[in-house]
Image (cartoon, rainbow, N blue to C red; front, side):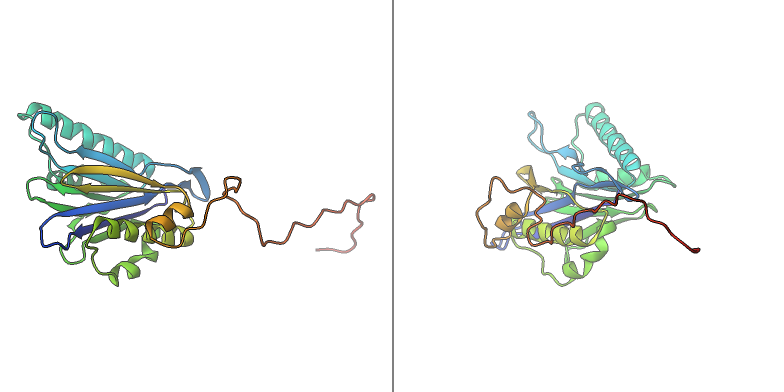
Length: 258
């Protein structure tokens, strides 16, 4: 499952300690050179925030890269374990830190999985990003950079993230994640399709879907041209028309060897 995953943490510049995180992924699932799914959902919600009784809880989303079967198994097993703990242990809501460490214990040798675990932790009162590689190493994203990438398309955007200052608003973080995914999808043949974003903060989480360049330019505050309702996704304007195939009435004769 060729993938590009990007997670960016932001902190508001108004002097408060309010923070949040934006995670994004493409939607292409490929098997070698064959695209098996163009609209896959690679961002799996694990913690959805507070319930109706306490209204307190963390928000956590897992971004999956690697084998689709292995990562789906890990996400399902993680969600089941956390749900069971919440029902059995006095309905204690899970945290992002506990989710990431539990995911590390589930990572086994032979699992082709590289995972980003991000969200807003209601105990620490801040946004967190964890990265888990297929070897079982769990790393927390530091406070300075606040960014993490994974997947086959991540190699094309690491330099861009290293040269970018941490965003100071949710809109800036969404624009940065969208730009990184767009650049990676242009270079990486295993990444493509649409762009899915999830924003997480103390108020909860929200999903976003970017289907076209028009939506992306609108998010990046670029000049947006009016869309043509009749225009298709594949536009061959400016390309030379295909040459007609000429059929011969008599078969060609060849002489000599190859």
